Image (cartoon, rainbow, N blue to C red; front, side, top):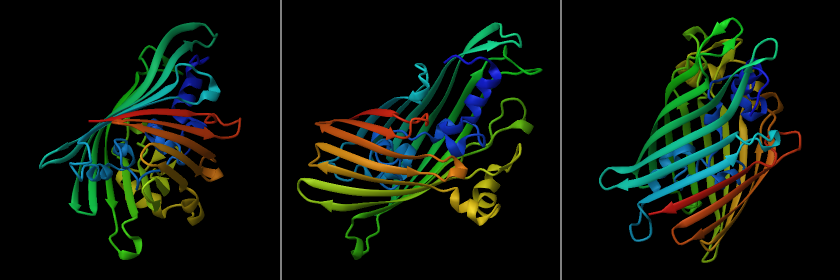
Length: 364
């Protein structure tokens, strides 16, 4: 990826526009909001209540607690890897996103997990005011997550993530105006997830309810604390309903609502604790607070446990990013292996249009 000057690079990397929508311009490291897993990517980028594979570390760590219930059928371990050439409309061959997740059940302890998220932003070219190149550098951002999940009751699970975040945008040799500062920052965050399977007779053990609060932590500092950028603390709540299930056919419906819990006016952002539990919910107009929610609707059909077809829709209000797109996907299971594909169908002007995700999973 070649950018004419660093100012444009900073806008591209930190603001993102359609890259991350609600995370753009309001928080640091918006790559943490990119939905991993081609399976969820094919269902409207939702899955907080489904969360029944290794990518639950992102969607809802509590889902890990339900993945080893019957030793005769369930495998104690699973690993999953996803790759996507990000924003294909820009035609940047070195702009891509990778996600790795693994989980394993430990007797008398519970389910533990590990994930690695990496957004490669490629090579940048720095020029002076006369357009003369004086440096080249690579930019990247990544996060390492440790997860733990257990059941509080047979139908209620809880999960917690601890996350190390690293943002490496530019070396100290790069000038931004009159400042020469290394564009590198390190942060820490926590995620909390809850998954509940209501045992009321009316639901016939078909319904799951999921909640996830992610990226809860202090702001990241690149230059000084006064210019620190908040993390993209995120609220997600959703349902998964097993609409139909017989010997050969299974249909599951999912619905997620999602909201960024960052409150920023001008260059000043509220403290992450205040923004998460108070100001994001009560400040501003009621209309804006309601419109700031995104909505994900998806459906998955399985024939046996062999072939899956998926479809979904993602909707975001025009004032908060205006992402509206259809998604499609498919899956194939063979023995201990699973392969999934997800596709975003959007208008040609959207950098997300034609985004494809590929995932490979193995159980052991």
